[in-house]
Length: 227
Image (cartoon, rainbow, N blue to C red):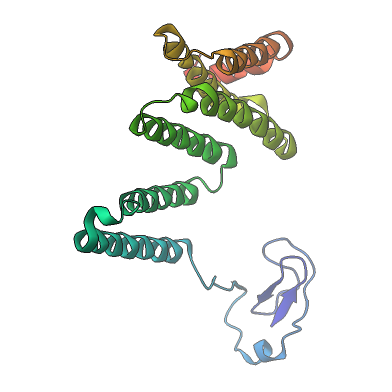
């Protein structure tokens, strides 16, 4: 049995080159593997100890257990433990966030976008439950969207993504940013400066894209709208 130093795998048989990368094979550094009969030139790939499916089941079991314990606490102590309901809600949200993270683990920008949108909805709900003070739509939403846009550009730059690969996420962010006009129009947001700055920032971003990256925008339109 031989070894590929490039792929770091053991190869059965009497091959001279690795069937994956065609690099020259060397003597296997693991002497125990040399005792295995050679029945073909197939690489031996070690299976991971913990698969994504197992981790998902484990986290789900932990969250279900916490929910059961919290429900038991509610039955025993009721309103004497007022934070128990929030604990149950937090556990449910954490479980959903984990599932989303596992589902979009290969697309960081999409994962962050979904997580921020969930956070916005949760903050709006909490703000509503405490009397709609307004901290969610005055500060949290505009700052979160601007931060998301900055992180999106950083990830795209580091990953060397083309505009066509992340433009739809920025478009969605801009759409949510424009929804802030609803709170301003109905008079709920009496401090509109963060929201206005957020909307203006997205308009500037897309004005720059239209002026300096017209060709990439056309490619994105052709890709997503089959034009």
